[in-house]
Length: 305
Image 1 (cartoon, rainbow, N blue to C red):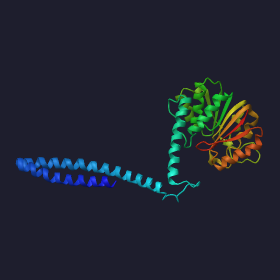
Image 2: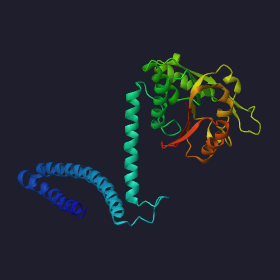
Image 3: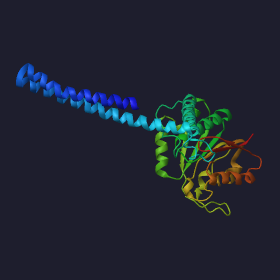
C-alpha cells in the first residue's frame, strides 16, 4: 500500500508539471490560440486525473481495510474477540468461507434434484434453507408417501410439487397456511411453475386447539379432517412469534393420521423453543426415532420405519 501511495504522489507531481507546461509550450508555438488549446488539454487532463484518483482512492481504502483485517487475523490480535467456542478471527473467516461454499453446493444440489426454472423467494432467511429443501426432496423421492403435510407454505410447497412431477411421484401435498394473502402468493408461485395440480394450499386461520393445557393458537383443526396416511410432514409453522410451543400441536393432532412409515422434518431447532417442542414429542411419539440434522437453521428428523 505504501508503494501504491508513492506512485500516486509521483503521478500527481507529473500531472502538475503537465498542467503548467502544456499551456506555456502551446503559447510559445502558436501564441494566444495555442495557449487556449493548451489550457483545454490541461483541463481535460485534470478531469481524467480527478476521476482516476477518486476510483483509485476507493479501491485503495477497500484494500487497506482488507489488509488490516487479514494482518490482525494472522497475528492473533483479534483473538480476544472470539466466538463462543473460542475460535480466533482467522478461524471465523475460514468458517464463513466454508459456510458460503456449503450453501452454494446446497443450491447446486437442489437445482440438480428439482427443475426450478421460474424463480423462488430468497432461501434461508424467513423461508426454508436450501439444505432443508435438499433433505425434504430426498425424503420425498426415497419414501414416496401417499400424503405430505406442511405447517406453513411457500418455497417448500413449490419445491415439493416440482419434485413430485419430476420424479413421477403420485402423492397428495397439502400445505396449511394461516395467512390468506400469503396462501395466494404460494398459489401464484405454484401456477407460475405449472404445478398447481400437485399441491394444495389450505387457509387454516390460527385459533384454539383441542389439546388440554395448550393455549397457543394453531391451525384450524378442521383443515385436517380429510387427511390420512400421512407419510411426510414438514413442520415450519406457525411462526415463532405466535406464542410458546407454537409448533407443538402438529404431532399430537396428526398422530392418528400418520402412515406406518412416516417422516417428520422439523425446521429451526437451533431455537430453544422449537428444540423444546421436539423434546416434548418423545412421549407423544414413543415408537419414532429422533435424530438431529446439522442444517443451517438446525433441524430434527423424526422417523418411523
